Length: 200
Image 1: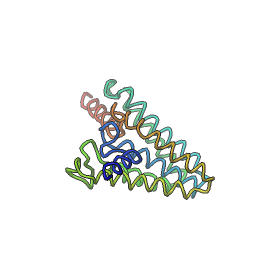
Image 2: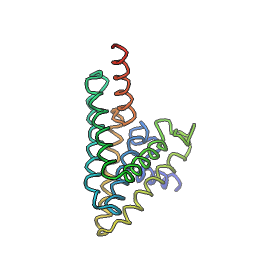
Image 3: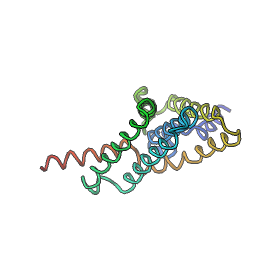
Image 4: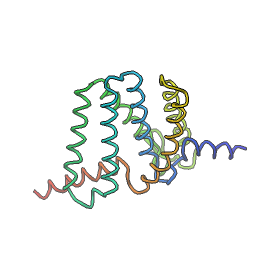
């Protein structure tokens, strides 16, 4: 019975090291953006659409750069990568410094608490074979579900949002298995620029 319940929990919130075994970094990052988008739509609808557009552009470009393999192109695409995301941040700050800060804090906290491919995070060490990563997965998913149910929209839409995100989860983990992870993409872009600066 215990194993059945654990497997059901893994199916809902994701396994300890993700569906692809490459960790939960990209999933937590996606969930943080979804949480931010819902908070904005709920509490600050005047700027929500613009902020959500910025988040979508940000997330999509991370995926595109990861899929295309930044490291294969040297600094050629690394400079535009940072320039674009700096521009997105500047636009967000102009729109609302407060919400730009809130969005950044939620995303950073989510990212650093995500169990990696070894089940470790800033709060976990040597946790691969423990249930702690599963608990962390449950906590962030519960936060997402709670905010989704607090949205001032029809119940069926709230349920649809939750189901939609659950369907997207294994897809994001699959892409993470293909090295489409914000930390990998950003590090590669930075390393390309660092190597390029050394040549000059």
